[in-house]
Image (cartoon, rainbow, N blue to C red; front, side, top):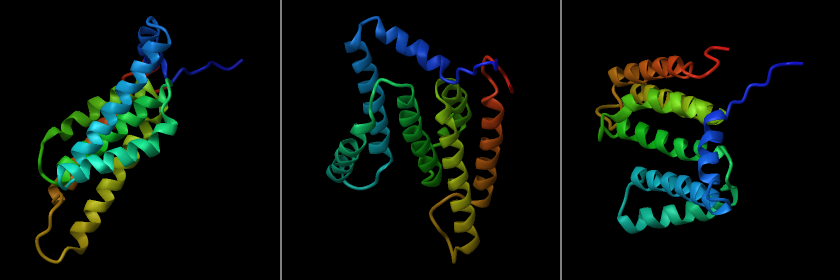
Length: 169
């Protein structure tokens, strides 16, 4: 007698569109998200192109056993995007971090694994705060001001996940 919360409603809409092409459509859906996630892993890695490609191939071979036409493929993809965005902030290579709340709003409607985005953000904040606290001299990473910006991103992301059919319910 309890109401059922469909936390993957948007993923089901997307998958229904791919299903119009049958099982081949779902295979394309899975391949797009798996490949997209691995592209962001490649972009996040450091080192030569060959070393990064080797790491991606090794990671893909390991992760492939979990790839299937299910809503959690969105969590695989968005986890890779989240790490890419956060490392961009740490390395000071981009200012794309403000995309994070938008990504979280979309992710929260696609799969309940959006909590991974908050876990990653929290770990990055803790790591950078500890790095600043124990640093002896200049260091690569986020300054105290940047840590504050990441906390703000987290708070805005919390508000952003309320953009769903049920609101704060």
